[in-house]
Image 1: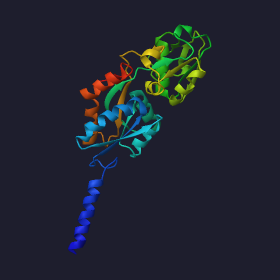
Image 2 (image 1 turned 30 degrees about the horizontal axis):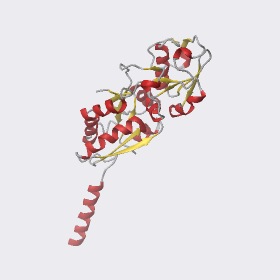
Image 3 (image 1 turned 135 degrees about the vertical axis):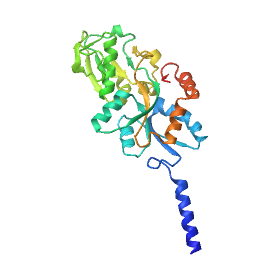
Image 4 (image 1 turned 180 degrees about the vertical axis):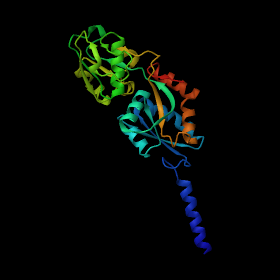
Length: 265
């Protein structure tokens, strides 16, 4: 009997030591979904900081903007780090979910790029313009074009504007929404493309040098660490939030991206 009890105790101890991941707030593993650039790069800088605090940060890289949220909702992953508040609000509304912001980390000034023209003034009448096909980023792209006078929107502050909201289009620009990840790959085929900075950087574009139009440093589109209501106050999550907004990470963002990505803290 004593031998049996000892074996049971050992088994329970092993189970306790190996517990981790999304469903167990007492575990020391923390999983985060992120797009490759700059989110995963920034998280890699945080990994050794958390290791010193006993948290094993596991970074899961995704190439799209849907699965990172879906997998957090399904508790397959603890958190994600890739999106702005307008995108998050739209996702929650359309999917009846309740993902929440943990902390703001950085801003990626959104830009317009062209392989054919060196300045926006060279853009011809009837030019083909691609932009992201998700509501939040499509609206963001149109707001940038409107700010620079290429179009006029019926509501210049509508973050979810679509091409249907354009009331003046002097150059008769032809808009083609595409999945955000496809925009850099099709840049050679169009006249102008509105590209999220994470995909621009991954494609070797320098937003500061290559963008014909770019948001300024006052852009409200902060990229957030996002989780669920049930893990918002998890000590592991709070340790990550603190590390992501530390002076060390601020210095890394400033030195690594040289203005293409800006700290939001």
